[in-house]
Length: 223
Figure 1 (cartoon, helix red, strand yellow):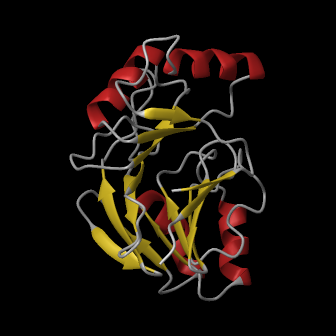
Figure 2 (tube, one colour):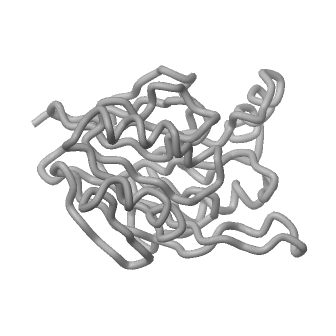
Figure 3 (tube, one colour):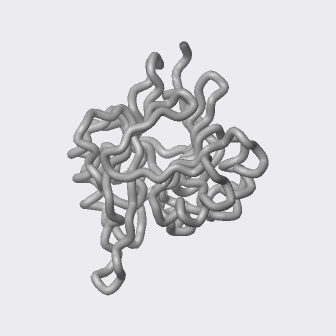
C-alpha cells in the first residue's frame, strides 16, 4: 500500500489522501475555497472562522452524500440538523475510524488569547492509516496540546494571537515528532515567513531534532 499524501490548503487546513480516500482538517475561511470539496471525512477542531467555515462545510456535505463530519459539540450543533446521521460529536479521549483512517481525539480547550476573553473548546486529531508506511499525523488546532503518544508529523501552529515563538519551539521539542510542518501561518507576510523559517532552522534555536518544513498553499508532500 502506498503512503499518505498531505496537501496544504492554506492557513490551518490540510487534506490527507491515500488510496482514493480523502480526509480534510479545518477547511476554514482563510483556506482555499475548494478545500473541503470531495472529501470523505471532514474534521473540525473548533468554531473560529479560520478553522470552521459553515458555508463551505454545508456545500461539501450537500454535494457528496457520503461525506461525514466529526467535530466538537459547538460546531456539531450547528451542522447536525441539516445532515442527520452524518455529523458526529467527539471529545477528548475518543477514537473512531472513518473512510479507513483511524483518528484519536486529544485536548479540550483553546489556548488563552487574553484573560479577558473566555476560552472555548478545541480538540486536536491524530490521524493514521493502518497498513500505511506513513506514521501518525497530529493537528492540534488552536492549542499546544501534547498528545502523549509518538507522532511522525506534527502540524505546527507557528503564528497566532495566542502564541509566541519560544512556546512554539518548546512545544515541538516536547512532542518530538520526526517532522514539523507549518500551519496557522495565514497572518504572516513573506518577510515573517522567512524569519520563522530561519528561526526554526539551524540559524535559530531550532526544533530539537525535528525536520521543519513549510508547504505553500496547494503544495503536497508524501508522508
